[in-house]
Amino acid sequence: MIDLRSDTKTRPTPEMRAAIASAEVGDEQRREDPTVNELERRAAKLLGQAEAVFVPTATMANEIALSCLGERGDEVVAEENSHIFVAELGGPAVHAGLMTRPLRCPAGRFTPEQLRETVRRTDHSHVPATKIVSVENTHNASGGRVWQPDELEAVVSTARELELRLHLDGARVLNAAVALDVPAAEIGRRFDTVTLCFSKGLGCPLGALVAGSPELMANARRLKHLFGGAMRQAGIVAAAGVYALEHNIERLADDHTRARRLGEGLHEAGVPVDLEQVETNFVQVDVAPLGLSAEEALERLAEKGVGLSRTVHPTRLRAVTHLDVDDDDIERAVELIPRALGALARV
Ligand SMILES: Cc1ncc(COP(=O)(O)O)c(C=O)c1O
Image (cartoon, rainbow, N blue to C red; front, side, top):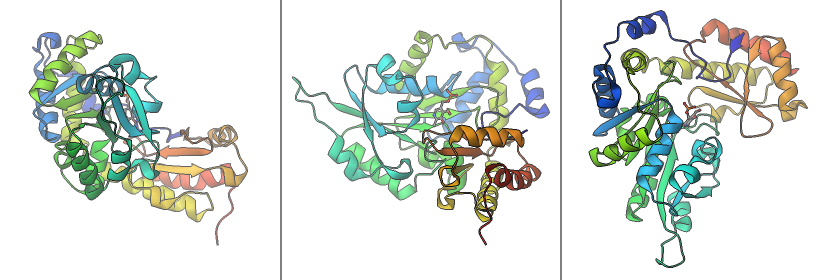
């Protein structure tokens, strides 16, 4: 099967497995694991932050970050389909006691004006305070879209002016940095807390981290233990992360090139793909104009040996490129997907 369901489907390469096998390890809870310490140091620097805390998943990193930034009853503002709102089981409410203020906007990117209209000032008697803005970059639900630097700067400076705290759900921030050809720190340094995921484009079996100031990260470490996320010889998995930071960042550009080739090939073959949306490693396909439901389309694709997956949009599927997909897979997918979906070539 050509597995384009998600960039989380990668399996560690022999080289990554060798790095895992030879990892130096210690008691991570006591900060005695040299490989975890090394990963946290390198990743913090990469993201333009002072410190980082290694955790098992990006969901945990997001939830710890939000818990660090707000108090119970405060509000967090984010795009309505952001991962923290639609895919973490209500975690911001459960763990941090936050109220959620969703913003509706194209491509996952909201404007300073939307922020100004939404933010509420507390009167300390009735009105809850808006305290946190969370930005997702790249933005999963909109198809891996990237915040342009000027748009990001405008939102960040408005948030600062409004005395809000800023979280970056940068599970895929390295895809954004590679797509924009800027250092990841150029994006990450603007935020109070940053999430980075190792088990997506970076190709690790698991692992993520939250980065921020020493004060915030001291609290993040406390919360990590409280969440049950403090580990023991976690260097076994952190070694994969160290390997990935050395070998798997620049190659994300290959995933982006392959997604573009896939998008263009499908578009030419008459499959409804919005090419403007293909900015990183996602291609979204709307099956409604082909007269198919998402379930029917997925079944037909599976019969031809291609895996796509659902999105938050009922008739839109996604194909995601990653380390385990090569040029030949893409050419085969360009042949098989239009046939499976019964698309007619646009001549
Ligand atoms: C933007 C974003 N943030 C966070 C996560 C959570 O990652 P995990 O499933 O590793 O907890 C995901 C997963 O798809 C994601 O796309």
